[in-house]
Image (cartoon, rainbow, N blue to C red):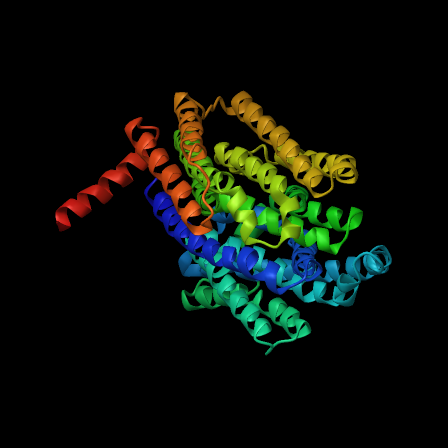
Length: 494
């Protein structure tokens, strides 16, 4: 997995530097500088625009991921594929504008009392929807050109730097909150602009009409993949964001702010997976085209092991320090403790499942994947309706955990039945056992009154015990090879 490994490592570096900046933004600054309602506003605007944005892609990012290899032709600017991408984006946005104006009265009516701040800035949904549509489309196009790490850089790292600057301008009274929220909306367009500039610089875009022989030959399949891609894509993004809207619906904007802040810790677990999924999808597509199931099975098995290792370590660092983390934040955020637990556990499961989603939706069974995703969003909505009124924001997190448990099990069973691929072995049990030992090693350390010392001590114990045991027990060939290369370089320098 040379290309996959390089792109994944590079993307993961950007992701985790960005995660550190995100931690500063989301955990250390925003809860102390903004009210819970203001934090909730920034999150619900992004969540709703992401759901609309996915709908506005008309499923075309799935078409790009699945069918772009047939258009690939550098000399012919990939048969003007970029023109088709832009055309789809503009059409999708026009439809979203129509839907927005149809449901706008309902959104205002439902939120005018519980979330008046959202009603005040509801108009920002339109530019954010436009940005969301074109980010998804252009980033997917850039990804299939084997440059997945740049999209990670601009979205996970550079964008968070810009948000940090905006928070600083608000803190020093240079920006009012109104100025900040406008700035916040504008900077989300920067990743789209930077990816476009990169593609233009590399001569990867063309605005010539796309109706080439390649397009005509694949026209029927494009429509079919797009239709089912719209179902699966919309369900997937809705599954990630619908809980925030439902928390706002059943509670208020302040509860949404607390929930979204706690949710951030869970997303840190899946960050390295995002880099892998982005580049692995392109390789899997090419492998399906060549009928090379051995490559696909290899990626499946290695991704399940390596992602579980990384995700387990991050989960341990978060949950092993949960009480210290909550001490850093305002008291109101303590109610998000088990939101962090359940969301982190849900993403840990997903990481352990490897590239199972990519295998299904990039295969001839992409219609089945759409059905699975539709089932996921239905289960999430139903469980949220059941649990939020009873358990509040913890209920929303519990609903996500149970929904993703069902989702992961269905994908595993389907892939085993159709492809006879099974990624799990004794190494997974070793990783989980090492995780338990690492947690217990940190747990027995007595608490101190010095917060920073306690954080460093517990984190240090978890990292050292976990990494040493993973290395000694040879849980992953890739991890051991990386460790050996690092050791060899250090010894050579000495």
